Amino acid sequence: MSADDKPTILVDAGELRLPRFSGAVRVQRATLRTGHFSLLGSAAYVAIDRYELGSFARLVADPDAFRERCRRLAKHDFRVIVVEAARGAVMPAAIEGCGVPVLFGRTPTGAARIIEKLLTLVWRQQRQRAGIDHAPPFITGGPRPHVVVYDLPDGEEPPVPLGAA
Image (cartoon, rainbow, N blue to C red):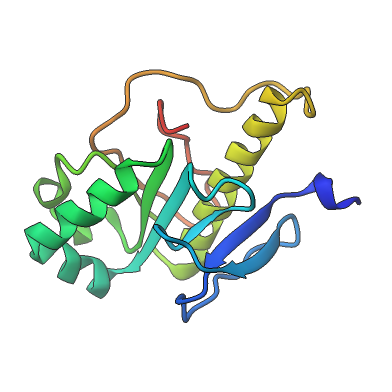
């Protein structure tokens, strides 16, 4: 497998807990301006934040800090917040209007799967647009959602929010 056959996920140098990604991706530490995860060569366009429930609850409890975080993420064409908790752990009203899709992965493993799957889909779409990969497109255009909430049991594949790319 050549270096171009699988995506390289960038993990912010400040991330203390490195997710357990599969062997289908490469992982590289980087200093990211926004987000905890991105793709090699796409950090200006792709940003994913990951939070444990306690960290996310503290962020949401400070409306100014939460709006600022969402504002920074919203500058990216593809942006998502992934929370390591079940959907019911956070009140939907607390995250409405943030302009960034929020996905719930229940466990650290579930969150890692969501991050890996989404970044792999974005990487594949970028390759398709560049004429490198001729597989059918995975992400379609459409209106950007304000909040998209998914609660994924371990082992289920995450859907890609419309307009997320």
